[in-house]
Length: 171
Image 1 (cartoon, rainbow, N blue to C red):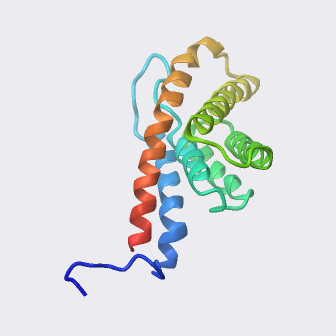
Image 2 (spheres, rainbow, N blue to C red):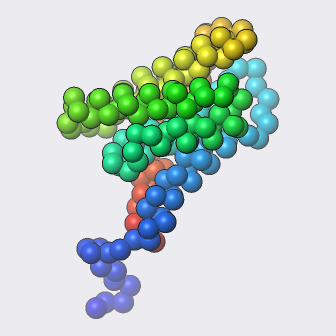
């Protein structure tokens, strides 16, 4: 065998890496809302949601449909949204993606981007609706730049998840 050669077939990856690396990336994405940032308008995309959607579109059978409840609970703790909003919205996103998986057997990258962009916009708009029903008074037009940035940042999240996916199989 040549020096530096690693076989790719029949490799066993570390069990903690197969589930742990995607979960940690989603949790770290949710923690980006923790450092204080001063902005007149919300501009930072919900990176936890972007990472969750990116992992879901890359590896469809990575998590069962109830896992977004846990990730949404963690995101609700740090995002400042009313408790339960991300749990409801992220689980709804997973269920909608399950419907798309049954309806569209094979999707390409552009279709995934359109579906994810639509779901991101719906989640952000519904989040404003939930926050306003809990006593907030934010007009919907304020989050339009955040929706645009989030939809445009989705391919970067998919790229980061693809890199992490390659890395987790090497461990």
